[in-house]
Each structure stands twice: as structure tokens, then as C-alpha cells.
Amino acid sequence: MGEVMVVEGYSFTDENMAKQARTEADGVRYVKARTDMSKPDQVFNVYHRLLAQKMFQTPVGYAYLKELQDYLKTMPGIRIEDIRPIPVAPTLVVNDTQGISDRWRRRLEKEQNKLRTSIVANFAFVISILLMFLITATSGQTTILNYEKKLQDRYAQWEQQLTQREKSIREEEQELELDFDTVLDDEEEKELEESE
Image 1 (cartoon, rainbow, N blue to C red):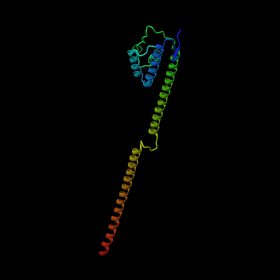
Image 2 (tube, one colour; image 1 turned 90 degrees about the horizontal axis):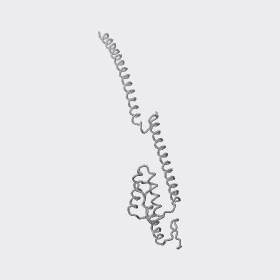
Image 3 (cartoon, rainbow, N blue to C red; image 1 turned 45 degrees about the vertical axis):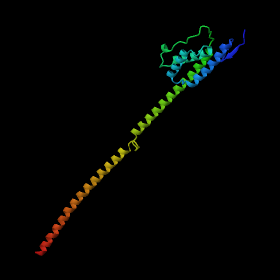
Image 4 (cartoon, helix red, strand yellow; image 1 turned 180 degrees about the horizontal axis):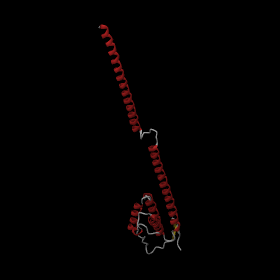
């Protein structure tokens, strides 16, 4: 039996296969660094491009393809029928990749929990903003939202008070003029009487 070479947790006895596995491990790191896992459509396209280019031929590459495939199966916007199966080279024997899948599953659950928390927080913010608007709208105090209306109401009230005061003053003036006319008339009569 030849020398055993370990690449990404897989042991190889064939030097060429180990070299290919190292190249694929570098390729996996490169693809992971440039793929936004929060965009299922992008992941879908990357997955199918990797399959079409037949970039991976060792367990290292197949494990990554399986991770992508499992991720895509959990995304609600992606139909499972549209996810192509992973073609396996006829001379390859794939060992158990359960450890990698479990790691991927834990990471996915962690991201889903973050997403749920974010949704709940955003919902709470929206509700609190709506409550603030409701309180402002039903409040009797002057705020920036009802300032103009309050000002118009106040001016209308002042105008009405001024109109009433002006009316009462005119009425009093009229009464005084009548009294003054009456007083003058009496005095004129006296003068008239005296002059006679």
C-alpha cells in the first residue's frame, strides 16, 4: 500500500487524486469567497455552472457540491425539480460526508435564526412607528402635524371675538349718537326758546 495523503479530512493513496483534491479545495475556497449565500438565485447559478464545467472530481469537490445542493433544497424560491443531481465519476468512491453536511446544516440554521430575529425586530419597529403616529393623531396637544390647523382655528376664534366686540362697540356708538342727538336737540330747543 502506498503513502496516505490527507486533504480536507479525506485520505488518498493516489498522489494524482490527492493533488486534484488540493486543487479542488482551493477552488472551493475561491467559490465560497465570491458567492453570496444570502442570494439563492446566485447560489443556484454557481451550482449549475460548477456542474456544467465538471470542476470537481474528488470527494472534496463533491462534498461542496452536496452542501450547495442541500442549501438550495431548503430555499423556498427554488423548485427541487430544477436542481440537477451531481454526476459522479465512474472510478470515484465517495466516503461519508455527513460531518460536512452537519456543519453546513448548523450554519444554515444559525443564519435562519438571524433572519427570523431580524424580521421580528423590523416588525416591532414598524408597529412602534405606527403607534407613534396614532398617538400623535389622537393627541389634543399641538404638534408639528396639527400645528397649522390649530393656528387657523385660533385665528378664526380671534377674528370671531373681534367681530363681536366691533359689533357691540358700534351698537354702543349708535346708542350714544342717538343720545347725543337727543341732547343737542334739547339744547337747541332751549336756545330757541331763549331767543324767542
